[in-house]
Image (cartoon, rainbow, N blue to C red; front, side, top):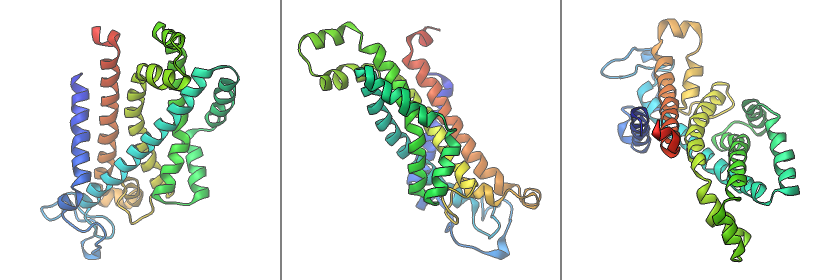
Length: 271
């Protein structure tokens, strides 16, 4: 794998460890306020400084990793499972099944911009982590379904699939034992890039007040609380550190996705 993908894996590993051991890494209670310590700059007592209510930013960034990674993992897992199942059925059976699923169902979801549809769903359902995850799953499965459908349409014509069909193998065995294992490689790349998209979408919706409600230590909420001009001038650290956490996480998953694409594609490896 490329050097950048190794760097991405290392960054993600650090964030995963931070999320797992957050209670032991955090130096302060994430909800403890102290108005006399508001907007204190980075120091030995507060490594990333404090926010508008005197809460420790380092501790909030550490616990924010839990929320972002939880959203990313659950959204990608559910979206990939649903999308793979629907896309595989559409590609394998083709005909009217494919017309109904890819011709109508896929296009209905693709007709709306993803983030706007998520905003509408969360606004209708109400703010909350579970509702945010549900909304992101609703808009995320279509990309996986289209990808798997295209792969299944290609793989189902291979000789070993025709041989399995000639030997009397059933549709379930052909699809899930013979076709999907040979069509899954692009899905792995899509999943790593989908993690970056889910983390960014969670931060965006939380920034808009439609994601994880405050005072939860979400990176998007932290940026929203520090976005006014006076805060940027007096305490830029309140915005910089959660912004860096989002940027590093998204960049790391993109590095991993690019590395996996090169590793799984023999033509890219030869280059």
